[in-house]
Image (cartoon, rainbow, N blue to C red; front, side, top):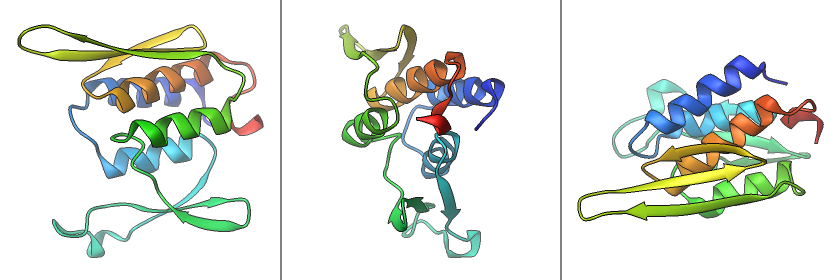
Length: 135
């Protein structure tokens, strides 16, 4: 299980990031208790972005784009904390939009809905006594 300080620092990274990031995806999966194997750096290029695989049960699966895909982020939240209440809203004006997420009474915001939801989820796990690995 990750330390609360690490989870909070990762939540801050989610809020500060303006676009999806495959390295951040791997960090989020690890923080949620998954065993992750990252793609070797010498195989990463513009045409083959960073990524990797994670262990779910006895199967290795490709890392989802949790920082850029709301469906992946919601899936992880439902898997790791199925009983938690959550919400996500977009607040837009003429020039910009921001997403605000609330997970188990922990809030976060971001430029992408998935990033806001990840940040709020990580804050909720940092605050919870059980942590993501025990669910």
